[in-house]
Image 1 (cartoon, rainbow, N blue to C red):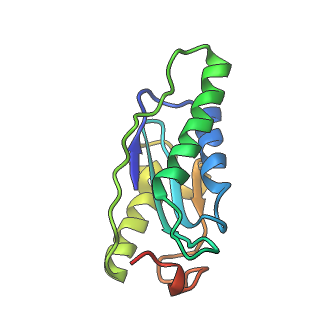
Image 2 (image 1 turned 45 degrees about the vertical axis):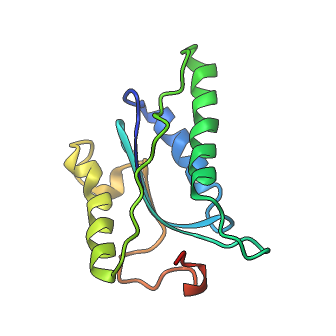
Image 3 (image 1 turned 60 degrees about the vertical axis):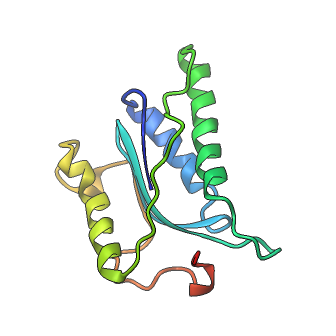
Length: 145
């Protein structure tokens, strides 16, 4: 999933958004990798099932994180509007090669944006698995089909 920001986020705002995105990890989704850049956010995740068997709504997870972050930013800055656009772009990754490619793109995005020289230095990066080849920390039963 990718979503754009209306304006560039500063470092504390990026940290706040990342905190709100990581919060539902393991309960509503399994977050594999996430990177909050000044102008965009990119994520790979698997949405989990509720106890009832229903799949958590992806839009609920992401939009709630954006809304919480937006409210805090508005409160802190006095801006009139949230710094996030309403839309998000999601795509189902269909095979391990596509997962590996997208995972590497997200991992290297802070370097590509010339924010750091090494991805490990970037505070706005969350990596749950060491590489896309690492067994995921969830079962295939969690995968949305």
